[in-house]
Image 1 (cartoon, rainbow over the protein chains, first blue to last red):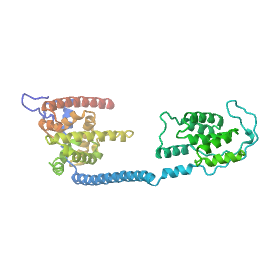
Image 2: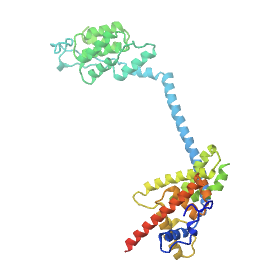
Image 3: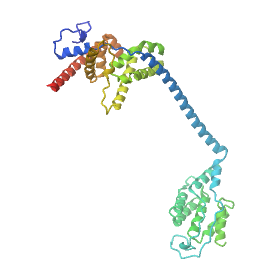
Image 4: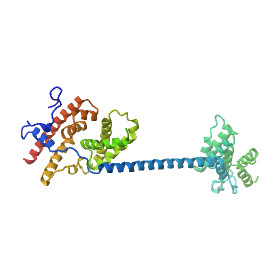
Length: 244
Length: 173
């Protein structure tokens, strides 16, 4: 059938006359002969032209909208960052987390110690005083950020995670004993660390919570080291509550 | 070479190729539109050596995408991609038109099972009356390849038609 004699194009099936009637060849030829060349439907040219114009317009509008949304998001983000720096929102946040005159209630009569490793408790668990909450996790981060902004840099090997862990132990697990152990380690290793003030304040809080006898000495130490520190109110109240 | 002149010159040919490639009838306007949107987007990068081949490649890709989408769309309804009731026919009387539709239904049922390149070569050569050189230019292949595809297409169509007739005979008998 294909290709034809040298140099001549092959003939079309529809031009064949030698197919045996009733054969598959004849059937295929009849199928092909029954077809007409394709003719484009009337109006397609105009329909497609119109659709192309609309699609072009739609795409331009969508592109513009996308650009406008992207620009808006960028402006908002940039404005937020600039506002935070210019208006001092971070300082405001840090200020909000500072203790607002924390209140220490009475501390009860000392009772025998239950944990040898822990400092001697000065009150029974049943008679738990109201413990002022001075530091939060977010507050820790804000204070640290504020100190970095003030030009302080952490010591080379300073690891602040014990302070965070101690805060969690105290607040969530209600385990002031282990919290104090972690804080003591941190304060011994980094007496001038980035979170030394907070570590000392949390120690006071843990000591009050556990009715430890050294709560007053911790408070005194805080006031000596940081007379106008953000937790001085806590220290003073602790001293008053313990009769110092 | 500007977009408008390409559109005016080649729209009919693109429609013919879409038909030969078996683009779903209901989507044919959309396929043409997509083809020319791609043409407009890529025209600045076109080298201008073989417009027919370039347009055919775009058309083929668009038809393939639409057929795939149509397959997903009709996965449960099992509707054929080629709706013969909507194929153009200029018959005079209803009886002849009905017979014609039946022949079209059978032929396009068989062609739907064929490979795209062979199917296009067969339709363009046997039905549309294009020469081998024209088809070679459109498909961007040597003329010998067109003859080879045509040979394979005829052989395949004959086999499919034989099988179809056997099935019909079994159903009737």
